[in-house]
Amino acid sequence: MTDNNRVIIFDTTLRDGEQSPGASMTREEKLRIAKQLEKMRVDVIEAGFAIASPGDFASVKAIADTIKDSTICSLSRALDADIDRAGEALVNANSGRIHTFIATSPIHMKYKLQMDPDKVVEQAVYAVKRARNLISDVEFSLEDASRSDLDFMCRIIEKVIDAGARTINIPDTVGYAVPDEFGHTITQLLSRIPNADKAVFSVHCHNDLGLAVANSLAAVTAGARQVECTINGLGERAGNASLEEVVMALRTRQDVLGLHTGIDATQIVPASRLVSSVTGFPVQPNKAIVGANAFAHESGIHQDGVLKHRETYEIMTAQDVGWNANKMVMGKHSGRSAFRSRLEELGTTFESDAELNTAFARFKDLADKKHEIFDEDLQALVSDTRASH
Ligand code: KIV
Ligand code: ZN
Image 1 (spheres, rainbow, N blue to C red):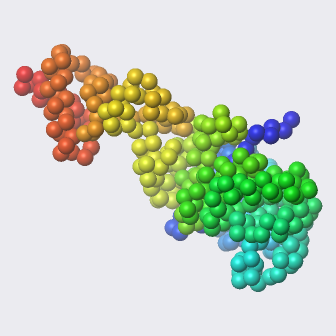
Image 2 (tube, rainbow, N blue to C red):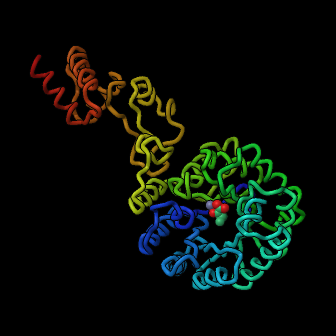
Image 3 (cartoon, rainbow, N blue to C red):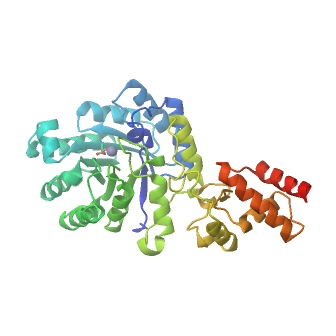
C-alpha cells in the first residue's frame, strides 16, 4: 500500500554537494559517504554525473555496484552521450535511476541553450525516452523551474510523463523562490497537469537567500513528495537544502505537517562529521542539528530550565540525531545550579552552601577572563576554595 504522507529523501551530496568549489572527493571517499547514507536509510543517492569525468563515472559505478538498499542515481543532460554513460555506470545497480534535465526558463533557453521552447520540449521527451530504454526509473528536472513560465512547465511536464518519467523535479536552481510562491507553483502544477498522478513531484532548492529548507517544506506541504538535499547543506554557491534540517523539521513538526521520512536520524551526526572531514568544510558551531552548539546551553536561565525539564529549551534530544548528549557549557552566563550539577557529575559535592557560594564567585571571576572553562578549571577552582577555607 502506498503511503501518501511519506517524503522520499534524495541526497545529492555526492553530486551537487561536490559541485561546491573545493569539495571534490575521491572514489573511496564517495563510497564511504554512500555507505553512511545507506545506513541512514536515504531513499535515493545521487552518486555523481557519470559523463563529467572518468573519475566520476568510476565513482557512480563503484557506488552502484556496492550499495543495495538505496536507489543509486546518476545525473545526465538531455543528451545521448550523457544518458548512455549514466546507464553504463548504473548497469549493476540493484535499483538505479537516470536523472536527466534541461533548462526551461526564458533566460536559460535563450542565452544558454539557444533553443526555442518547442525544441526544448522535443529534446526533453527524446531524452526521457532514451533513458527509459536503459532503465525503468527515470527522473526529469526542469532546470531553473522557479524562473520558468507556469504554462510552459505544465506543457513539458505532461509530455515527459507520457514519455515515461516517473519523478518530476522542480529545482529552484538559483535560490530565487520564496516559500508561499514556491508552494503555490507546486499546487498549480499538481492541479493543472492531467497526468500528474503518474509521477512523484520533487523539489531541489538552493540556498542563495537562505530559504532552501523553507521552500522545500512549503513544497511538500503543497504535495511534493521528494526532497533533494545534501548533508550540511553542501552545494553550489550558498549550498542546497540541508538534509538534516529538512528531516528533523518534518519529524519534529509532524503534528502540523503530517509527513514523515524513512531516515534513521541517529545517523545524521556521524554523516555530518564524515562529510565535513572528507571535504575539509567545517560545520559552523551554530548550524541547526549538527553544529557543536546545537544542543549546548551556556546561559544560567537556560541551564537551570533544562536541568529542571529538558523540553524547556530543547525541541528534540541530542541523542535523536546522533549526539551522545546535550552539553552544559560553563561560561560567564552560567548559573549556580548548572555549576553545582557539573561538579557533581565530576564527583565533587559541596560540604556547605558557603563553600558553594565562594567557589561559584571564583568561577564567575574566572569566566570573565577566560573564553572557555574546562572541567579541569572547575576542579582546580574547588581545590583552591577548599585550601583557602
Ligand atoms: O540546481 C539544479 O537545477 C540542479 C539540476 C541539475 C537538478 O542541480
Ligand atoms: Zn542544484
